[in-house]
Image (cartoon, rainbow, N blue to C red; front, side, top):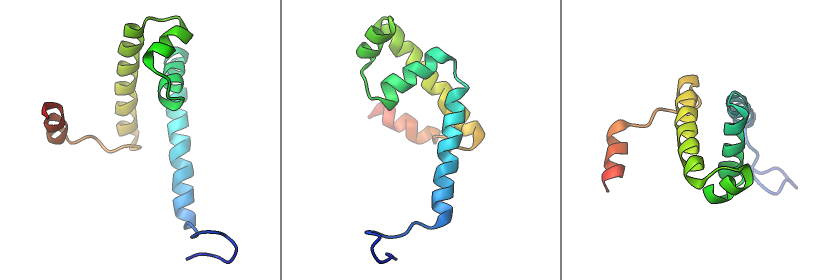
Length: 100
């Protein structure tokens, strides 16, 4: 339901609160990473730079960035699942996607 002059539908308060909680959970989890990994995630994922650009900016080889970023994202995913921020990936579906 839209409110007069608001330009759009109102979000229920719980949806806004849940979004804020999700963002805080993600921020806290990212803050637990070592500083080098925080930089990699920020540069490659949040700022959408290539691994090559990250390597150049951070003084690393592209292959090293690729390995470190992949390992970091795997650990982040496991942490998000453990904290209940994300649901675990169904193994069967993941295997099917890898074989397509």
